Length: 72
Image 1 (cartoon, rainbow, N blue to C red):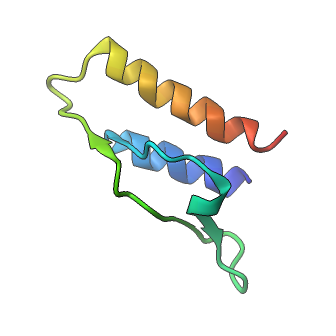
Image 2 (image 1 turned 45 degrees about the horizontal axis):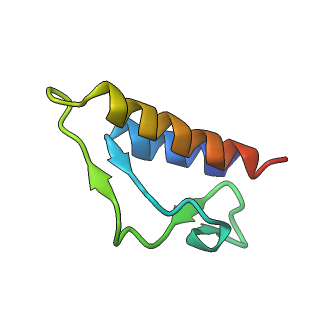
């Protein structure tokens, strides 16, 4: 799960909001468990670093919290 959280952070660092943080959209490679793949980017949102709003930053934070809560 730590790798899954790290990957969503990397996605967010690229200013992309996945908009579908569900377990079915995450895949751990069997032979390489440190490799995580996020699927299903059909609803994603991308943000411009020069124009990102505080609301958009909050949406990224909330999405990360959802993923972190999968660990519990």
